[in-house]
Amino acid sequence: MRTDFSQNPIVKHSIEFALMIIKYAELLDDNRKYIIAKQLLRSGTSIGANVMEAQSAESKADFIHKLKIADKEAHETWYWLYLCEQSESYFFNKELSSKLDEIMRILNAIILTGKKK
Image 1 (cartoon, rainbow, N blue to C red):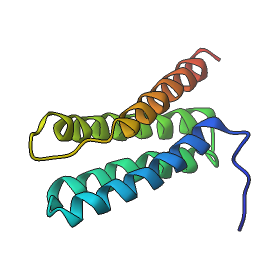
Image 2 (image 1 turned 90 degrees about the horizontal axis):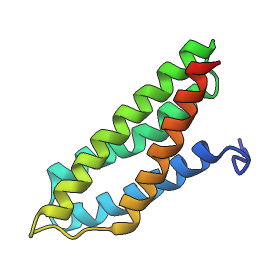
Image 3 (image 1 turned 90 degrees about the vertical axis):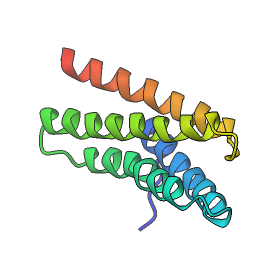
Image 4 (image 1 turned 30 degrees about the vertical axis):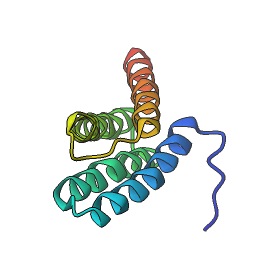
C-alpha cells in the first residue's frame, strides 16, 4: 500500500521523524547505549503511530484523544533526547531536536483548533 502523505504535514513530519529516530537509536545501540536507544525508539516511533491512528478516528473527540497521546509521546521523546544532549557520554543530534519541536508545535495547533470547533 503506497500512500502520499505530502499533503498532511503532521503525518509527513512524524514519519520522517520516526525514520530519523530509528537511525539514531541504531547508532546509540552500536555504542552500547541500549537503554536510552530502546526508550527513544519506542516513544519516538509511537508519535507517528498515534498520528496515523488519528487519521481513521471514529469521531472528533477520538481524533483529538489520539493526537494528545502522540503529544505525550513527543514529550517523552523530548526528555530522552534532552538526557542525550546533557550527558557527556552521549552524542546528540540537533536535527532530531529541531524536528521534534516542529512536530510538537503542529500537534499543539491541531489539538487547540480541534477543541475550538
